[in-house]
Image (cartoon, rainbow, N blue to C red):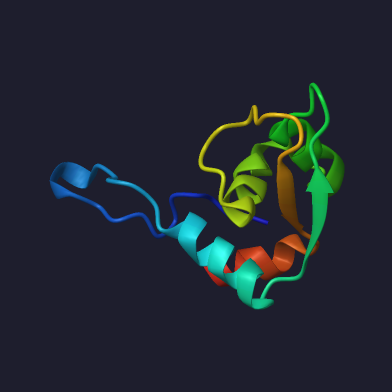
Length: 97
């Protein structure tokens, strides 16, 4: 499956991306129940890329968990942070592609 965080990114002159709107789309879809998710509370030394690798089989999808949880673009998040992990990556892919 080919989903990327820059698929719908606005493009400026010279073809450079300004940013991405996917975090907002994914976060809102999780909040409204359009994308099913489960909660996970981070423990010491947990990282989003490692969690994504376990959950999705691809550590590069860490940004999906970050977007769904509304925590920005950091793989290292403080212990005790409550994550929202989309349970079906295909729902995310359908939403952002």
